[in-house]
Image (cartoon, rainbow over all chains, first blue to last red; front, side):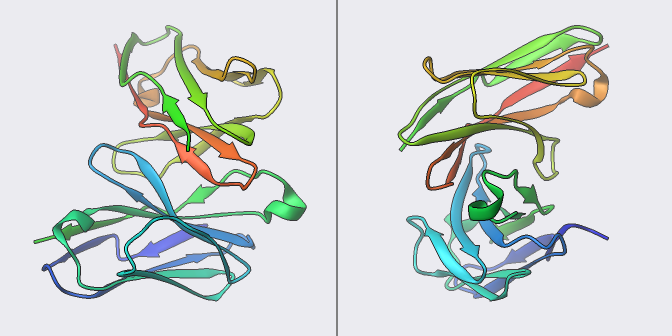
Length: 116
Length: 109
């Protein structure tokens, strides 16, 4: 019955590897997001999709590629992992902004990525 | 872009009141959110202000002054479980949400 679930919760891997993080929401929301929270605790938006369409694409290395197979899922694939990619990655979702106005975002529990 | 400033840390006693200030500068302001984040957990929504004034929700209240670029979150009757990081987040008219670095509140017995 988890609202926004992301897997895995912990990811430890070596530099240069490729990895994916999955996110699913069962809230019926139209908009999903990926955030990165670094060691200084800043939460920074990376991407946002609305009904499978990319609407926010911040300045993120193109090693990061989001994919939204349907509006309930937003996955994040990262190629050639670097030490600086170590962080907590949060997925979030919210109701449609056009019809619902400014709605709060619901966050998953985060994926703690550690690069060795 | 936007600058969002909030104090790094605050400490208060159980049962007391704490006020967390947040100042911001942004174009296309479209509302301000407050989130609570316990260590190692996800941020959870606390409050939203888009018009000037005070919004009250139980022990938590949030205030906004758009002309001053200022908001505060007021936590009353502090409990130990309120020890957490409190994030101020500014929404723009393109619906991008920008977060401050968070204020870590420690509640002492």
